[in-house]
Image 1 (cartoon, rainbow, N blue to C red):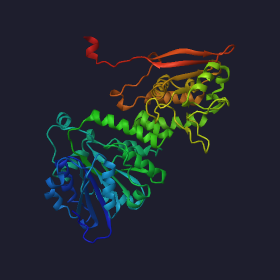
Image 2 (tube, rainbow, N blue to C red):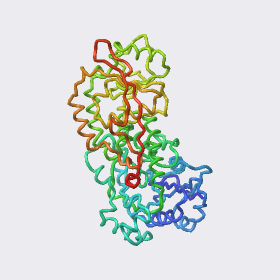
Image 3 (cartoon, rainbow, N blue to C red):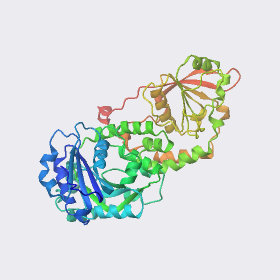
Image 4 (spheres, helix red, strand yellow):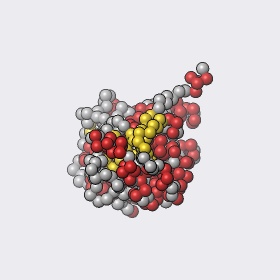
Length: 472
């Protein structure tokens, strides 16, 4: 169904991807019928992402009441980004508003987004109340359902209850940070149409939904379009059943894909510590990397460790975590160098990462060699680096030169920040190794007349058990 009717340009296009959320979609569309923006200035585009149920037919009565509504259906689904791109390709508005199918818009939502985009080119995050509540959680916390059919009363009640507030109101109203793009969640957002097409829209490689919106905002930021919060652009997130554990698993997979596409320290910080804590961690990581002398984390110990050199000579794919300075010239170069120091221009094999999240599949490398860089890391951070190294390599070797170890002020600063912010919000579902007791270290090589040494590293079994099992 296409309601453009010969119109070549509008002020705003609202793009709504939907999958199996007919009842929620109908409340969302109904709210868009009563916007303060004049009906001849906006359009609504609903994209069905191959729902098993014909949600467009089920919602036809409400769709017909929307002043200008186009409906599209993808033959194969599974990508919210692809559904949004399809809608955006049909859009003729100067501003694109992306609204989730379960978000009821306040009457002045479109006006608020238009005003923000008129003032400057931004990736605008609207103020979304009651995010991610299920009906049972709503009943527990709030009691009876609220009037989803009445956006005016709905917003008035939501504004008066701090339990439903949007966390981004605090996070994004402070000083801008390099990781603000990570708060761009497409429940209720806007961007200029020209900016959308300039960066190529949403990446369609992300399965399902989650993280593809953050990745889009990162590319916008790289093109000079910052992420901002719009407290006036309000919407209400309708409670609905959800597979929260499934969401967390999917998001961690999509984190991995994002880091693979953008292997940067700031992206690793978001993927490692969570969106909110990354705002605290990232400035300390940036200072740590800027003050780090590559010579203090290089491979100098290899000259005194013949057994390690022999092993490297016989190994095909080697990754180095630290820096590859003083790498013996007679050895094949490493396949990858991972370390927080900035890579030299023209060094495609260097990824400027801490090592707490690596963008590689399991057993990508035959050997991961960790330089004495590990000495600078707080123990919980070191454990995460070791865990990732063992995951990505068939074998892990650590170099050490205890006599040269000296903790700098940047490392002490990093340790203090990570002590408070080092645990991501999702750790309750994906426990992280945080103690050296969870690893086995065995001497592999020792210099004849020096303290230099190399250690073999492997994981120890560490099953997670419910407390009831411990007490039984």
